[in-house]
Length: 428
Image 1: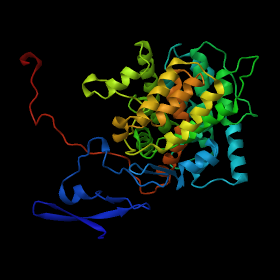
Image 2: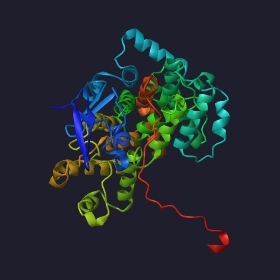
Image 3: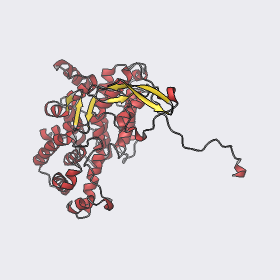
Image 4: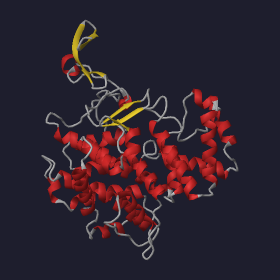
């Protein structure tokens, strides 16, 4: 195959380089298209545009493949932990014993927020959305590290990355406790990452929450499965902001805002809202399934199918097994979870959904697990943000280490008025 693509525009022909990724993906490098032809490309939503070259995550949506730094998600889910996987994503390789110990120690050393941060929490309304608090407080954390202003490099990167991964969990738990009018719980150095989050969220001042191993494992798995997912909306936002040489905390704060949108991070929340509507209507899911097959009904199954994965979501099969274990362990009697199981069974066996590949995705099962764990609906997207933080940090690191990276600046096709004169207000 030729290493150039020939594009003909009228009588003019231009040659553009072809870039080939390590997994055989092909792209046409159009960086000089406008300078050579006066044309730009138009790709609404960037659905067919590669915004960067990245060595972090590989997805094949047709085959249902997801790999972090080349390692299949199935292997990581079975053998690794969220923190070990976070190290892999950020630094490129699995850590040895010493590296993992040093990374874990950094997380523990930087898990506490500056005490002055308490006053920031007090300034939010009681019912402020946790994602608004999370984004604001991540930015505020950056103010307590003056070296972050040194944006020509990545000052103290190991420390700043550890601070962000560790403190995002502390911020999340503090925002949850504030929304409930509860005193804040400090992290315990003896607890591992995910167990510590559950402690900070659910322990009482004189009574520690029971840390069921299956519960801890389930939440850790949710974090691991969400740790990165290529150039999605929030990750692309982090790279966009980072390209301006904004600091790590500012860039990841922007990622939180992008993730907050219901079309992105709100998918697992939408699952529970759907289940609630079904229950309130007196349906056990049977009528809703029938309506979902009727395009004129306006009913849509949330948590089924995926924009990227055209066959199946590889994360769904992994998390389904843990979801079943959690529900069996906790013996929860919840009508919404009963409806969820009915929807799952129907869609996995009904030819209508099977033929259209509308299988339950990771959002369906993660929503069920978080409800079973007692995590409130408004905190679902916050949990997503905690899991996605390593991916955002790794993408930020790629941007800052790339010497040739320019500030992101997309073009547009102008469709407004052509030139016209100013009309005095008396004549309008």
